[in-house]
Image 1 (cartoon, rainbow, N blue to C red):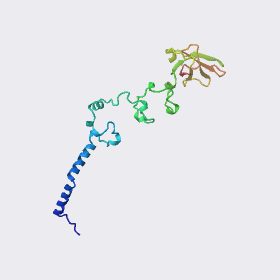
Image 2 (cartoon, rainbow, N blue to C red):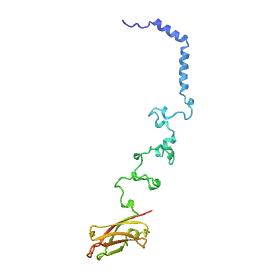
Image 3 (tube, helix red, strand yellow):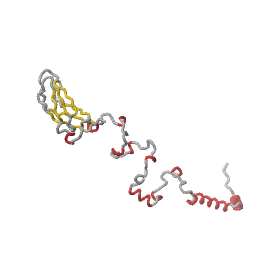
Image 4 (cartoon, rainbow, N blue to C red):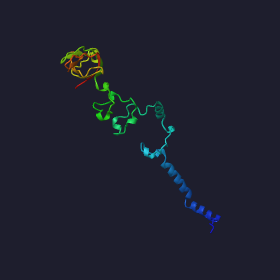
Length: 221
């Protein structure tokens, strides 16, 4: 069945009824009420939070000139404005830290534990107070005898450092006759040097060649 359209008389009667009931006044009040509800004077200071603002609704033109200037200079937030108390635990992860930005002075005593150090990542210079090599020529060593040389010219000697209480480890080069001569390092009465002791463990004389000895001097608390 086709739908019947309202007659002109019915439409005119509906308009008259709307006017009689105060329709225009009600519509005006509604418009004024809506305007008053969204007026800036009706919003209390600091009452709008990020939850009430639609994403991407704030543009550069909505910011104050001072804020725009600071953004252009790239110094927002201001230096020192973000303190440790304002950062949630675990919020700053490795990707958020610029390479080389953490210095020795930024680390507290004991802050880096063994778990934080990758296996095989530390070299001699990372664990030793001094590291390097020194050339020593013992000459012939009699059977059952020991020969002693000082580490003159090694890094501690050049720095005139006191290593008398430090631990010293030495390793001879590949040309050293290890099957005939054992090697140990001991502290010396000369505070900046250590002694290298070569002992002949055989029944025959041993004449080692001049050899480079690698050493580590480790600070012992």
